[in-house]
Image (cartoon, rainbow, N blue to C red):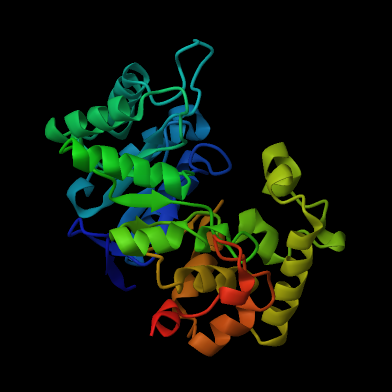
Amino acid sequence: MQYKQLGTTGLQVSQLCFGTMTFGAEASKKESHEMFSLAKEKGINFFDCANKYANGESERILGECIKDCRDEVIITTKAASRVNSDVNSIGLSRKHLMLELEKSLKRLNSEYIDIYYLHYFDPYTNMEDTMRFLDDAVKQGKILYTGVSNWSAWQIMKAIHISKTNFLQTIDCIQPMYSLVKRQAEVELFPLAIDQNLAVVPYSPIGSGLLTGKYSTKNNNESTRLNEKDYYNQRYMDENYHNIANKFCSFAKDNGFDSAQLAISWAMNNDAVTAPIVGARNSKQLQSNLEAININMTQELREEISKLSITPPPAHDRLEENIDINNKLR
């Protein structure tokens, strides 16, 4: 396992982040503890969670797992999602974030959270209020660094501008969706992250299982996320995604690769990426996914794989000018 700088925080994190969304959901408490131990044994020191996962049970189990090694691991969690039927139990208001942060700290049995993500953008809350809450929480020592997940580039830059203008804690890390079938992050988010020295911790590098070959016709009755969750079906309903996945899985098989491992390695080796998030339902699946670090992802191999999908157009959409800007300016 190799370790990389997490933006400008000074933290060193493993090149893979273990996502604990299955803790207390698809994975039992016993299985969750076993997966945590395996991940740590393999050198992972970076663990992702959220307040809404398994209605808080994921945080509780993760809190049990880190009891004897809290200062050796980097723990993240998130807030913004609706947590109950109360009208104010959602969003990025100071009230909601304050209540959810305290609940997360209690469930994680920790005095601090290493990275606290704003899980979604909230168009109804004054962004300065949200950034001031994060700044207060950092000053109180309850969170150390901040991040955003599922935000667009303009939203992130607005938050950075507000925080720097008002001398507040700024954003350290972003968490976008990214895989061979979902490459929108390459257009503006990755260039933004490189320009602003932000860590990038993308999720769903295997496209919620689409890039594993599980969703071929002969396997479409298997118990999988796309079969069990409507929102995953909506996310990947475009036929183009399935065509890309089929081509990719055939490529992996023809070249002697495990498709899930190859998909993770492809995402991991984008220059902007710090550490993709990998999850698992059991230790066997996790063991296999962790082998992604052993694939020699050369530039030639990555380019060959990239050609199997559709490269998103540049933000200005002038395809004829998709050239090196330095050459253009000389």
